[in-house]
Length: 418
Ligand code: C6P
Image (cartoon, rainbow, N blue to C red; front, side, top):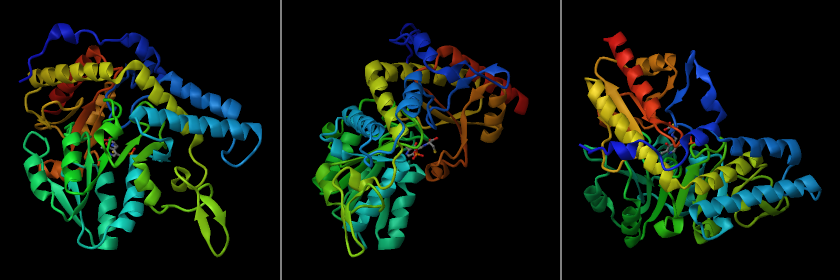
């Protein structure tokens, strides 16, 4: 078991009360109790910087982009493209052309499946996914399987929830054209050795799509250092707004891919006979985009970089270790799913005799927000023999006191239910 340094646990390396003050929602009460928000893997709360940037955009700039010469349209276009530059910096992409705005990680994966997949895969080609994927990184490949007759192979996990790298290496044959894999599991917290995964796939000529939805809020991501071919994430899990996310793709790959959706903004010239398309990144951004959301996400990316992801992650790990220890000490019949070394600050658990749904409902009565259910990762839960878990997931603004409230709430609920 992990040895805990309680001195190191006491304080994060930043002023957490000042940080909490940046999140208005943390002041509210839920069911008469102060809110303890531990559902950060589902969506994080938003700091004032993000809220104010979006409010300011609608108050002072709102216009459609790329369409008008008038001042507001110019300003909105500039702000939208500036946001793209911030996201480029956030993941260290080589060019702004490699940052495609999407509605989120889900849409980004669907884009790759339908554009790159349809253009490059044929019957019998294999896509490797892992047992711990979110449905967003399973279903689009199944749809492609129906359309093209490709095969999907699944990399299993070990008992502690880490990826079975030995089987990965066996599955990695020349039939594999794409490895589509999550960097961090939302259901188990496992952190996959993504650099090694990418290198080994590339050695055999396969491309790699990384689902970074649960990684970007908690660790620095450098897509060039990773050598990822595609990297996807959602804004709302990294302190940004909903409705916006990013598909990163290497420029040469994106350049060669056909557009996915057709419409305004993604074209060069349209006639009834023929249409030519805009260059990157606009080729993949049909229709009026989520302008305020892109601006908000740009601010969130800068906000995270300014704070320092390393410091935030160190504190989240302290919370993870403290919560794990407290839960193990206080809750007989506890089973934590996912205990891979170096896991992210996510605790998925079941309590003997208490249904996950009841845990979620009753802790909510005590002001504590956790997620219950299958977490859109049904295959891995079924593999581990459960239909549902309760899940607490931590963010930079959570405190040790909140962990205590959470564990006390679980204790009370357990007593009520048993
Ligand atoms: N996981 C959770 O509670 P969207 O919905 O497109 O923003 O993100 C989808 C997604 C993709 N991959 C991973 C690893 C994810 O965790 C998620 C979203 C949330 O765990 C909502 S189901």
